Length: 502
Image (cartoon, rainbow, N blue to C red; front, side):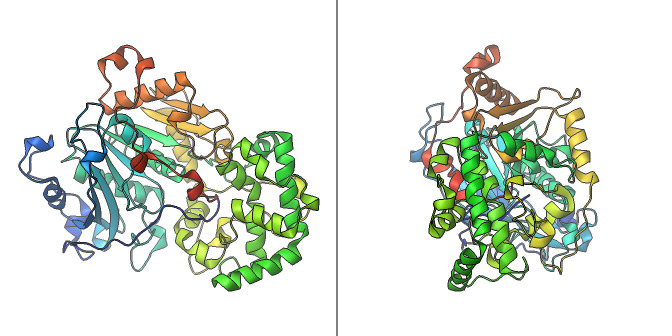
C-alpha cells in the first residue's frame, strides 16, 4: 500500500478554549466512559446546551467551536433553521485498551451536530482528521449528525512516547468503540460507520471487532489484501484497465523516466535542494526517485479517468525531459518519498508493513529498468521503529466479512487499482452489497452508481439509519438523499487528496 499524499485535507492549527481534561486523566476515566445524567433525545427535549452535554462526558475537552450558519442550509423537511454546529474536540483514550492503567493520550474528534433526534454517521479517514466542516455522503443521505475521528498515532493524536506496538487495527477499533459508547448517550438514534479507502477498511475492522455498535456500514473503495504475498490480481488489472492506447502512453512515459534517470535525477537533486528535502528514510535520492516513477501508472488510474489520457505525452520517446518530469510530478509527485513527505504517514506505512499488507506489482513493460522493484513499506518507516508482519490479521477480517457481514455496503470503482483486491461477500452475509461504479476511480461513491444500484444502495442506507420514508420502504427506486447538496460541505476534490496509499 502506497505512498505519500500531495496536499491531502488541510490541517489548520486550531486555537480556542481548551478544557482542563488532559492526558494525565486517571485510568478509571480512560477505561470506560461514564454514563451521563442528562436526558437524551431531541435538542428541544432538554434545556442543556449541546456543547455542555458533550463536554460533560468524562475525558472530553473542547479545542474550538466553528459554527456553521444555519441560513446556508435547508433540510429536506424545509426547515430553514436546520443548520449545524461544529466542534473540534479532544478525547482521552488509553494507549493500550487491554491495559488502560498504563497511560493515556489525547485523540482528536470533530462533531458536526445537527439534532439528537437524527441518526449519526461515524466517519473515519484512517489518517488525520480534517478540522473544517464537511459531510460524508451517508451523512447527507440520512440528513444526520457526523462524528469524525483521527486515527491513533497520526499527529497530534499520538502517545508520547510512542509505543508502536500499540498501533494495530484492534486498538484503533477500540478507540472508535469508546467514542461511540460515550456519544451514544446523547445521540441515541441509529448509527452508521463510513469511510473511504483506508477509512473504509477502518469502518470494516470496527464492525468486525464491535459488531453490535453500528446499525450499518458504508465502506468506499476499501482494499482487502488477504494474502500479502499474492498480488497477481493487480497485475491482471494493469494488463486490462482502460484502453491499450492509454496503457501504452502511460507505460512509455514511465519507461522514459527510468531510461533518462541520470538527467532527471540531476533535476531532482536541484528540486530537493531548493525545497530542503532529504532522503534518510528512503535511503537515497535514487531510491526515492525510482519509487516515485514506479508509482506513476498506479497513481494515474487511482485518481484519473480514462478521458485524462489525453494529457499524457503521446510519444514518450520524443518528449522532452521537462515533459517527462512534468507528467511524473503531476501524477506521482516528486516530494512523496522525501523525509518531509513520508514523516506524516509513518503510521500508515507501519500498518501496511505489520497488518494491512501492500501490493508488489511486476510492471513487465519496464523490462529490467528498475533497480529496486516496488519497494515495501519497511523502506518508508524509520529503522528505529521495529516491524513484524502479522499474516493472520487480514485473513481474519476477510473471513468474518464473508460469514458475518450484516448491513454492510461496499462501493468500488471499476478502474481503481485498489479494487483489484476487494472485500467479497459469502453465504453468511445478510442484507449486504458490493457495487461497482462503471469507469470509476478511487473517488467512486453511491452517487456514481448506475440508477438501479444507486437507488438500492440509498434505500439500504436510509433503512439502516432508521429514516427511510414510507414511500421508499414501499419502493426502493424512490430513494434519494434527505438533505440537499451543499457545495461547501459536500464537494470533494479527489485530485487534492492524491497519493498512492489507500
